[in-house]
Length: 523
Ligand code: G4P
Image (cartoon, rainbow, N blue to C red; front, side, top):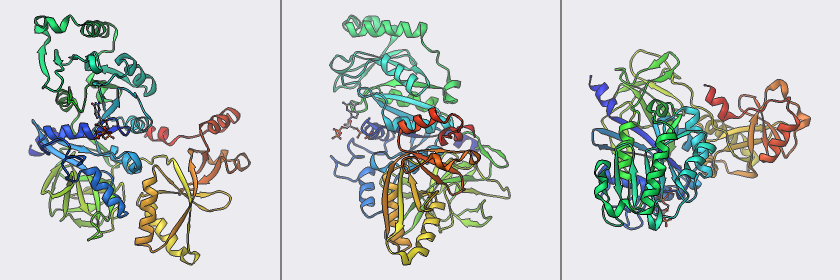
């Protein structure tokens, strides 16, 4: 019974956004509500002088170390909250995508002034492909942003997901009055620097000053329209990832943030069953199981250790327990476990489905590996492969080192640090990554772990599309649209840009071009 109760408390999610939309600011507010930090500014560390996650990452990176996502966990009300960080900016990498395989829901932040931006679209696609429930927070209402209706339309059109506004703003920027909270039937009044006030809609008539204002009347009319002609709220559709509840607010004020969080945390799903080779694994199954979604090398330079991040899928984790690595059948004792909480590492003694633990990697684990307790033998569904976007040719600086070079590449590729391709004609090695950081880490690790200096030759951003082997016609491709093979000897074309891709599609309708994002969503 205990396991079931513990699982029912878990809310494991990630916050996704384009850089500058307000992810750090919002996260910080959530950490404040969870009493994980005491004052605003701690996360960024600018004002308090303390190191924050992001600064800490920068430091680690300068030492050539890959520190990308971390986990923040804290109790809130009746729940145990796990927030997984999804790095953006120059830290954007395949790890960012993979982190999304370890969460049960996602909060998507959109800047009300800018609307939907490039990185949001990419991350959204991954959520869509995995069917992850998405909750939207439209931020920066204290600024003169775009019209709320226009923002909803943009979400529906660009992301192709139904929206349901959970609240509705009255005015914005200097004329911002507050929001109608449709879900809790109240009006949340914005009072500038003072704390917001909550007025039940049944008592709103008493606030003469407020209800006569033009912005209030306009918002009230829009709301009537939404109630009549807008989408119906459906929690089932939300949980299937087909409808996104939309909240308006301001992370910095903060305004509407705690109300958003309270509603989100109630509606967000708890850990569900997961697909594995031998069927479905229930989160309250008594035996421990989990999968590795990320391996972080050399986090502590003094120890040169590696930490494998495990998403627990069932049972109970206890420090010192023995688990089997499904891929090899080998048994490991999980003596060291750390949960990465902001910038400090704490050791944890027990954890349940939905929790993320960091375990010491004795150089045996790979991304996607399943760990299980007991006699059962199964593996969780393979982690999807994400299409790389940035390509470079790679070679050893010193040709005498080609043996180590091949060995290093082989291992790093197997570990999932980067993807490897071969040019069809020249057989030269081409690396593919989601972001620049992966190249930095690759170079650093080749030098430090395999003692090989590498040289890169820029290919640049390309759009990869896979081909059916029987349809490969070498003569159709050249350096602009490069024909390459992946590790499994499947052919793909690295199209130079959207224009080349569309031109090709129009002129060679007989050839099927396969987008990895679409293939993954069939699974
Ligand atoms: P990110 O993690 O998504 O990259 O965004 P971050 O929270 O760092 O926010 C980006 C900028 O937007 C910051 O300003 C932040 O203060 C501001 N911001 C966040 N939420 C709101 C909001 O609700 N309203 C307004 N008006 N601004 C908001 P900055 O000047 O770049 O940084 P800082 O010097 O203020 O820290």
